[in-house]
Image (cartoon, rainbow, N blue to C red):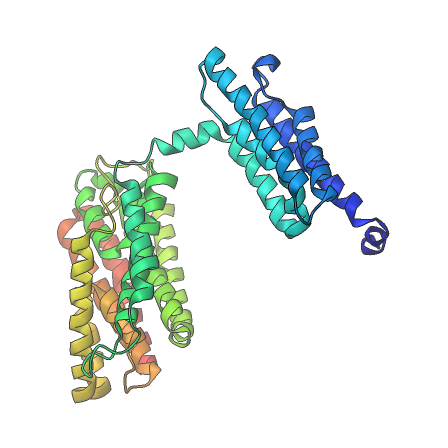
Length: 427
């Protein structure tokens, strides 16, 4: 019904209505944003911006082929805005040009609506309304940035957008059946998850409590998070229930992180891992909830409690070098073990690597073209995370407060036994 009605309306009328409505909305936002200022000090608000949009529409439809009327009108509008801006500097000693740039964008609405999809025009208008309204919010947000924040962002963009596309996608050698492209892609994937966790911790949840510390830290490194939380538990042993819950949630996020990496590199293996990891995540979360539910007292954050590397660069060159060295090492040793000992060797190796950083090993399993079935690769990943859970339990029991030990022994004990059982089922 609506399509039949709109089909009867000439397109020019619809486009004119869109230009007028969008221009009016932008003008109304300008009036609301400057409601406390004298109108004489403003270039214009609702009426002025609406007329600017209509003027742009008229001059565009007169000659949409050569655009000379539209360009001439734009030059006149720009001249008027320049005169107003210099007068504003002279009289008011203010240098902001947000309203002036917004006026120029309003003038360009007509060609935008005529030549681009409706959703793009609407998106631009919405973005204008939001940006001009959140000045104070953006100013407060910018205060959270450190001196090297944009350097960190630039490093990640160079890693992902400059170096990665330039690398060849051919195996390094007969012994290392992984190309430089896939090798660097693994670094980008792990760095991306770590960087995302870092941004969440710093800008979205800067004052997170123990539980959120465990969740965000688990995205970065569940082992490092376990060590930090266990050590800090000695400063406030009365928080043992919350700390133990946070450590288990960090482990739950480890399963999520590995699943996302598997989904990115090998969807088939990811789908085979999904039911096992879903059980692990659900069980870890349930035990964390039970520890909290039957705890007493208000949760407190021990002094200095923070996620790993909260205040440091998550893309340190030394960290990348360590990851690269481990990645190449595991590529060599995994290839040797598979060739010499087959699936039995990969089973033993997967338990051994759990005491190290398991990400390079798992990424090698996901990217390498090994001569064993995917089922055994899934088994190896289950063994690696189970071995890593054993390591985290040892860290937690040895470094944490005595009050922490019972919960950690129960929590990790259940996960380890379940991991061994699942590995047996897979094999």
